[in-house]
Length: 163
Image (tube, rainbow, N blue to C red; front, side, top):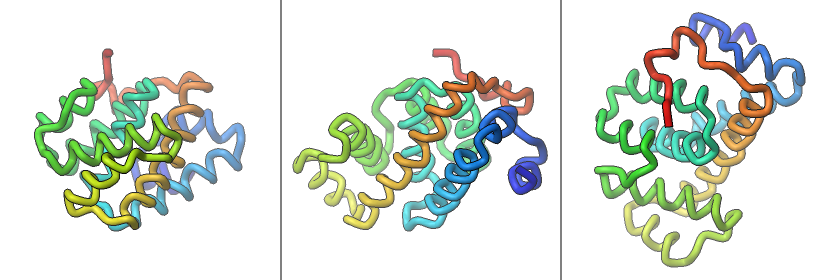
């Protein structure tokens, strides 16, 4: 929890609520830290995370990762499309979003056509497995945050998501 506070400048309520199960919080923090070290670039990682967050209706996650995309100076249209669950303006990132949704919808058994499209955009088999790591980390996060009804912290209020 101290590391999260140092990194963000405050302790998100969600982290405090997840700390009721230290193993759950520790597992998420370790998985998300590993996801950050993948070959996927920062915006691509955020596409994976936002795809999961919107699909699973995790309001705190959408707000937090909208803020992260803003810090990364991502195209505002990209962020808006992710929040609205609509096709992305960048074909490569749209293929990543589609691949992530297919992996979720088919519990990992991504249809060949979707995998081939993913690879045709310059992604690798390694990247496909890295998306699975992101799915594991952020499915845990979105489900746990919904379970504990994690609120949007005041620092994230400007990025709140109203579906």
